[in-house]
Image (cartoon, rainbow over all chains, first blue to last red):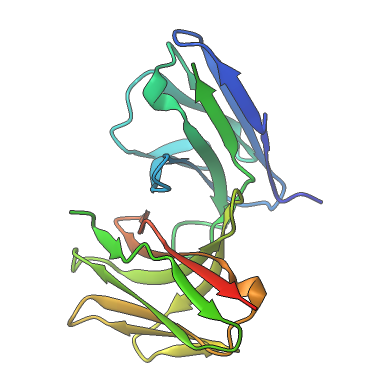
Length: 113
Length: 108
């Protein structure tokens, strides 16, 4: 009965590789988000989608490409991984917009070597 | 300077103590305010929303001062299970802006 799930939980990869993180929510929410939490624990929004439509793109390098095949899924693909991409990536969802509580997934810990 | 500033702590307090966290935000266009809690190596979870009139949820009391752009969280009768990082969060332009968090450690 997991509300927001992400796979994989851990991802270790080398610089230059391309990787994807998947996110699914079974809450029936319209809006989904990707956040990055860096080594200093600073949590920053990257993207938000509402009903499969991109709403926020927070000046993220275009190596990062979100894809929302339907409103229950928001995947994150990262090309040409760099050392600075190492972080924890959280997916979240909310019923409509940020006026409502956001429910976070368990996070994906990405380590780029 | 970050848009939402918090003292990182850690605050080390004994069980039963009262502890207060403060937060300031720099953008007066901020519309809504929240406290989230994040346990070590876990995801953030909403603790409570913050209203101008102040609001209470059990042992937790949140206050907002819009004129001073200041938000506070008071925890009474601290429990060991309150040990976590408390994130001050503001909503602006349909985005949540997170502070870096204040770490609380409650000891027996």
